[in-house]
Image (tube, rainbow, N blue to C red; front, side, top):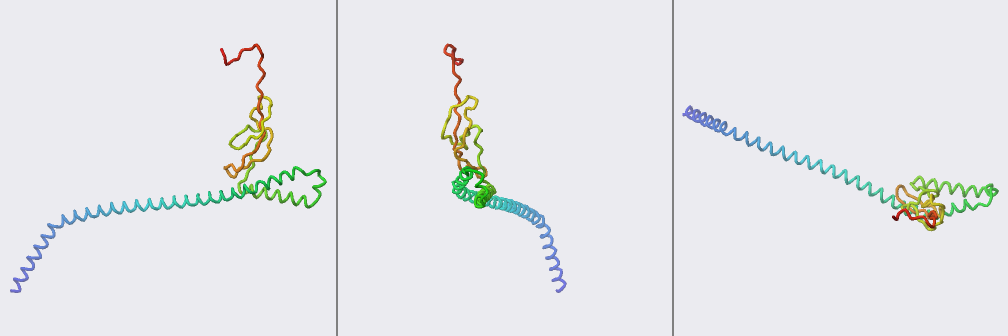
Length: 197
């Protein structure tokens, strides 16, 4: 009886092994399919992760640019408030009556303060706009006076009435200028106009 039981167990084990071997190809195919699905999911997750990293980098760059822009705008407000003081210094330096005053130490002190103020403002990006002798540019000049002159000097800035300034690449204050308005050459009485036929 023990032998019969052993044979029965062996027969069952053999049958189970055959069934398992018969079922194995299906399991391998299922496993391969599952593996491919998991590989696709992993690739999708990796792609999403890369996109999230790129979005984070772009966000950090954008926030840094916005912060720099806010600092520049805050500087622009302060610089605009300092421009009248700079104008006063310019007028004071131009109004010194003679060189005898330059011997006084307090005048030298004021000139030193003026130079240091100008240097600090230039370090932070303040630049004067060149105007005299330049062609009139409405983007950085504001014409307040016109003066007739030769036609070849038409639209040339003759005099700068108030300095204009840029802060980095942004216009902070336009230069107030006097512009030449060129005279038309006098036409002879009997000569026909070239534009008419």
